[in-house]
Image (cartoon, rainbow over all chains, first blue to last red):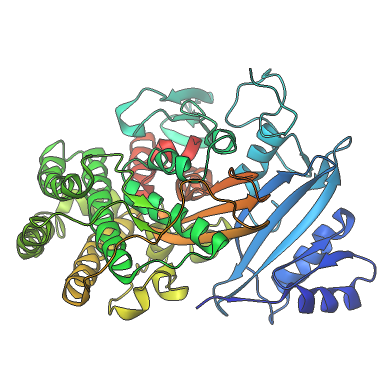
Amino acid sequence: MTIALSGKEIADKIAEKFPGSIIDSNQSYFVVKSESLLPVAMYLKDTPDYDFKYLNYVTAVDFHDRFEAVYQMTSLERNHSIVMKTTCPRDNPVLPSVVGLWKTADYQEREIYDLMGIRFEGHPNMRRIVLWDGFPGHPLRKDFNGA
Amino acid sequence: MALRTEPFALNIGPAHPSTHGVFRMRATLDGEVIVDLEPVFGYLHRGVEKLAEQRTYTGIIPLTDRLDYLASMSNNMAYCMAVEKLTEIKVPERALYLRVILSELQRIASHLVATGAFLNDCGAFMTPILYMLREREKILDLLEMVSGQRLTYNYMRIGGVSQDVPAEFMPALQKFMAQMPRFIGEYEQLLKENEVLIARSRGVGILSKEMAINSGASGPVLRASGVQWDLRKADPYAIYERFEFDIPTGEMGDSYDRYRVRIEEMRQSLRIIEQAVKQIPDGPVKAEVPHLFHPPRGEVYVHIEAPKGELGFYVVSDNSITPYRFHVRAPSLINLTALREMLIGWKIADAIIIFGSIDICMGEVDR
């Protein structure tokens, strides 16, 4: 059984290592500031106790007042997983890209950019992926009017 | 005087028989060798994730049929499990067994298409794929018996399955189970030491273990690279912990290993079905679930080992009758992440084989 690690416990460890980087945490996930996303992700990936070498998926949710990006990571060696989240404001939707750490994020970040309109800084090829260039707007946003 | 070649751009697809749908590879060639490649897709994009936000939880099931349309049963199962976890619905035992039996049949059907199409790409034109479709046809007959459909079954429901299997299903399944091992043996006899297959796929398109993990590969692609990771064992869902089966893995991570892993997995699926048929209890097949219901606020991610890899549904609920956000973790899309690295340095003819060995379904890549 894959053990879902406690977001709270990991958040406490991260807060020790990177003070002020955690916004919120509970049993199932933790939310990290977008500025600290990369160092925290790198720490989780390279610390042998965590060993999160496998990124299951990346996605984003539009909460009207903010965007939230969701990252689920798994360690295939230790068979445990954790969900990390980060947020960005709707008027300046920019997040750091994790492609350098996990190549998995490549198409998924492009898809989020395409459909949700979050720009990932540091992505080598930040262009639309399923819709055509010049498509008006980002359809997964809650205020998108497709009619 | 040495001959010099200029880089040359070639579009493979979108309408090309080897792309298994509408997929385009924009390749830059030096002579016959690929020096750069960019996959282009989206031709089948229907916006399933947005459509789902306007549908009731039950109304989304037919949309999941149309993701990986070669494995609709598995898609149904993963989605229903996600909503069941969100709403804390308990599924009756018999329904769990039926789900396992049908999704394992589906895995065999999907692997038959994958292997047949792969051999088609290798140049064994039409004979192997017809052999394999012949057996797949029998599986489709079985699935039609339970659902009335041959491709988009829409059979599973939140809380179980839509109806019990008809009386003639179990005898027909037993008959199929008795025949199938012989047919798998026949494929192997024809192909395992086939010189053409080995020459064209051994050592071709190697995906290293590290690269497979880093690029999020899953399913047979990951296992062929030597990673023993199968969600049915690593994170058992439904009732998989009750069955004995092995996880076949490859050694080199080449196209041949991916083909071998699929053949072995068909055998393991038969083993699971055999045990499930012995154990299946009588009883109800669906929990009492209203047509419209309000799952509690929250979010859930449920993943299963679909034929093509880790299929997951991430659902966010705001307590209304439709999901607030619906995201599909599509194995076909994510298995393509490493495609560029796998193809660079190989010739166009090999590219077709390597691409075929990944086994994707465009309905799931584009969504």
